[in-house]
Image (cartoon, rainbow, N blue to C red; front, side):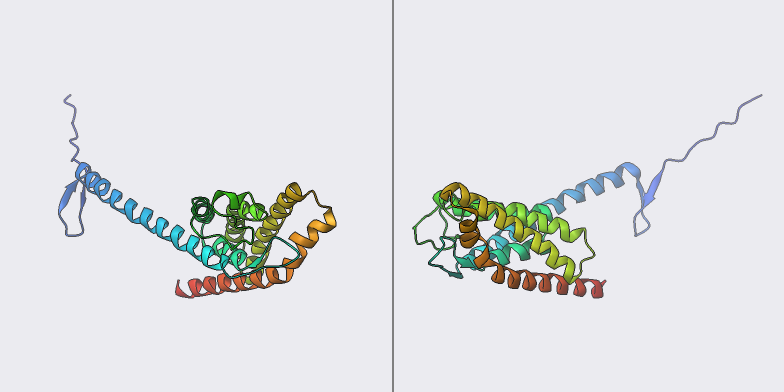
Length: 219
């Protein structure tokens, strides 16, 4: 008894204009189009990193020296907190790592120092612990914020956690450099900055929460 042989038609796709395209040709067209998005994404990330590091540098120069501590009051932490709330963890850490690299290369991005530290030496000075904590703190803020319900309270708590990490690193660094007592360390590295840090946390959280509300309305 003869067997009926079923002949399959070659699979094909249709373009929006109704032209029949083979699967192989369709895959080739897709693969040819995908790489064009990579340079655009890469350039966008580079632009964000440069803009973010510039923001930190500008805020670093808004500084008020304090006579009783080698650590000045600056707007630098505000920029770090804000970038953590606005960027992804990877971009946040990369932006602050780029900022530290710029300073290490000698660019005038760090806060003015009465000790005339510059370049790599600044990272080993009294404020080195604060500076080296920035990439980690910024990534931590971003991670906590993205896992929250993205309200003002969540933004404030995320920023506060990152700010606490910065203060801890800065205090430990000064402890190694000065061998001061715990009370002295708190006096020169933590307590003078708490009121200003509270304002910076509130401001960064308000901006992040407002941006999130606008994003939800536009969806």
